[in-house]
Length: 188
Ligand code: GLN
Image (cartoon, rainbow, N blue to C red; front, side):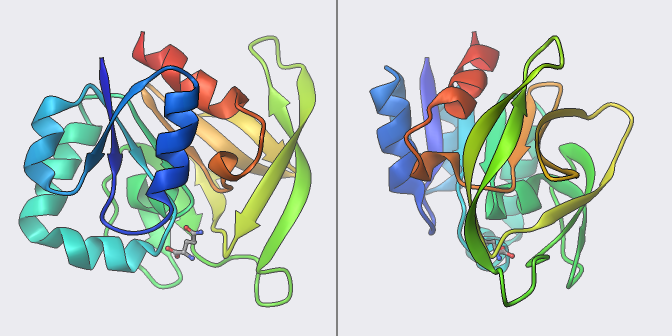
């Protein structure tokens, strides 16, 4: 089982390290063709508009087909790319998650912060989880098929629909491995 980490820009290496630490076989995906050789994908944080530019039309289409077929996990800019509707400003989304997401939604003053949110388990019990937000987006609308995996105050900050999941924070930047473990569990 090979897991790709999209390595066009952003903090892909932190994801690689975390996944390897959890025993996964990781490939850095620098060219869309490499998607043919992986069973799952992580789309890291970075700048979602830059990802779109670097992918180009053909790369976007290749990625769109992948995320509609195989397990994918997006963080921050990766979550923005996976969304159906993107605001502030509007931009194309891959449509793998039926969510509306607003870029840079926390404004300048708290544009980056570490906060404690809640991770929900299958029985809907919650446990605290440290979350790093960096110019984070906010999930403003959730389709009926979307499950909330974690919250921060009243906001959903990690979600899943089918075999696609996303977090608006950066689980690769804290010690807690539970979010990546959830993704690896989806691959089995
Ligand atoms: N603000 C970025 C965007 O809109 C996301 C920031 C991040 O990935 N840390 O794409």
